[in-house]
Amino acid sequence: MRISVIGCGYLGAVHAACMAKLGHEVVGVDVDERKIEELSAARAPFYEPGLDKLLREVQDTGRLTFTTDLAAAAGSAVHFICVGTPQKTGENAADMTYVDGAATGLLPYLFPNDVVVGKSTVPVGTASRLADIVRAKQPDAHVIWNPEFLREGHAVSDTLQPDRFVYGVLDGSEDHPAVAVLDAVYSTPLASGTPRLVTDHPTAELVKAAANSFLATKISFINAMAEVCEAAGADVTQLADAIGMDDRIGRKFLNAGIGFGGGCLPKDIRAFMARAGELGADQALTFLREVDAINMRRRTRVVELTRDLCGGTLLGKRVTVLGAAFKPESDDVRDSPALSIAAQLQLQGAVVTVTDPKALPNAARRFPELHYEVETSVAVMKADALLLLTEWQEYRDLDPYGLGSSVSSRRILDGRNVLDAAKWRAAGWVYRGLGRP
Ligand code: UGA
Image (cartoon, rainbow, N blue to C red; front, side):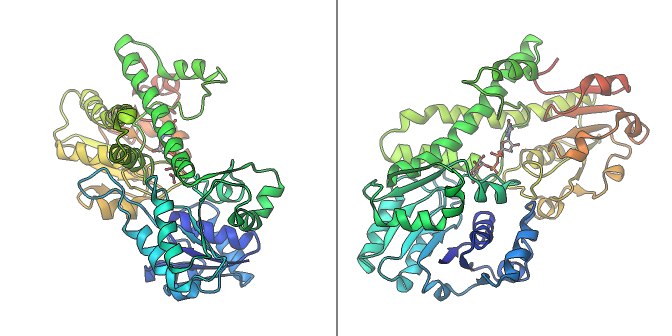
């Protein structure tokens, strides 16, 4: 099939490459010329494991091209909208400028029976609104909402082998003509047994908002338990293991630490609250305000703990932050709790050095006032305290004995609860976890 993908960020670039991998002829469109140049040269403009390799592989087949010209979408049977929906400045709501721009920009290039597929995370009601706009110009084209559930760091496999497909169509019916078209697009994963659900537009949009809200709630729940564990002298990691053994609860997303960040969970729960408010259902989601508050409290708590660890003052203390990305296997620093903690420590007088295997260029653009060091061995030199804030494997594997002679004081705060506390203590370190005695 001929497919266009509008928006080539994390979602769109991966989606375009994966659709070509599935055998389709794909054109990716983005307004950012630098991004298009990189992608055309088979280079991912961000770090995502496996994406460079996949881009090279599919570009060699000639099935994948990139352009800044939206007119190239003409002639595609399916048009995926993959643009961003960032948080509006100074508001909780999502900024719909890019989605609306992509949809209206496509209008001149739509033919009868074309299917416009929305993948961006949007406020409920968007699909039906866009369907009206599309129908006014091209009555025989369709709008289907097909939310994306990929995780950064696993984006390629999450796209090629997702847990499920959700198709939101106007009438919510399996017989809607767009369903068969999207089935053809995803024929390979569907043939291997990936479940797919057909819903109406608002249900499909809400599935995505609900999924991310649930994940955020799970993380804030365990972080709230960490607060109680700290007060009671209990260990939240053992508590998580124990409650996670109950199938109904599950151990995944129960890792207490510095909280969630990134370009999705924080802004998605806020946009969801804002939209519920517009719909008169704000009371239903007031708990998400608490989820957000618990999450933000983690960052202040780590700053306080670091002050304690440094003997009561941060002034002039050399603090090394291990990890800047919002999670490992990503160079994304959007709303990264690690970076926000590093910046807070610096503001309070600490001399902060940040290191990260992939995210330093992005971090330096966001917080130019922090000091960055590529080599871990150099970054830790003469540190008064180390803070492990993003659990890259190389930080999990650090040797407390080897490291001991480089630092000024053997103090470590494990912001992700991934180190073996006993081993670090045996090597002479003062070890602090979060929610652990
Ligand atoms: C999230 C969802 O997991 C995806 O399903 C969704 O498609 C995506 O948002 C999106 O809306 O596009 P992502 O932002 O890549 O994916 O990151 P997650 O893996 O969800 O992690 C989010 C944050 O939670 C990270 O900062 C991570 O460190 C933190 N986290 C995760 C914890 O603090 N504890 C945990 O147990 C798990």
